Length: 268
Image (cartoon, rainbow, N blue to C red; front, side):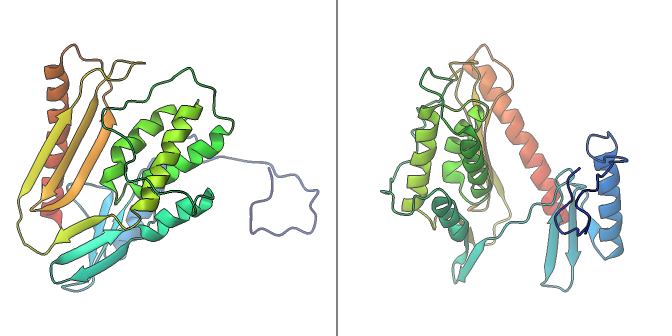
């Protein structure tokens, strides 16, 4: 094993023997979560009933801390938040500009469209992209940007289908998304101060649009009052024989999300 970052050893010729690895063990994630959850509970956090990986702590009547744990990871992300008389707007402008700067496209020509909803990528016969690792890195960063950008959710979902073997066509589409972000860096979410505790959901499904697998795409968006709080664009796991069948599957997935959100709102 190589020496871990931050560890000092005057004798660099030593060889480390790994006695036991936590990664790969079936109980590793469970034990890690048990340790973390017990620590949070001791420090005043309450485990949500609707989602056992969600921990909430009220420090006062107005101050709340929420921690959401995903398997054996904690993801930290930052948002820019602005408040006015109409409500709260939230975006990831700084992160979006960092993505553009990271691939050297700050001076690129902006694009006011990113991808047509009628365009569906597939494993085409164009030349393979020369640097697939950079493609994967870019798409992963775009995934985190969808935390506040539902407008690019469909495009990013399409790009994630070809992480293993991206082609030049796929890379061009990814760069077009970057050019779109360059034109709209401050686009984000707006939460109105109009207090309407009513969930409204919209569901959609196309049918057999992927040439490689003939699968369909599920899409939904859910509003709390007039504020968008949940959205998804995902390829369905099964090939359906009719558009009606695909639409019912999309409705079922949307219904599961509504049920989870109902429990979550009760906890909060």
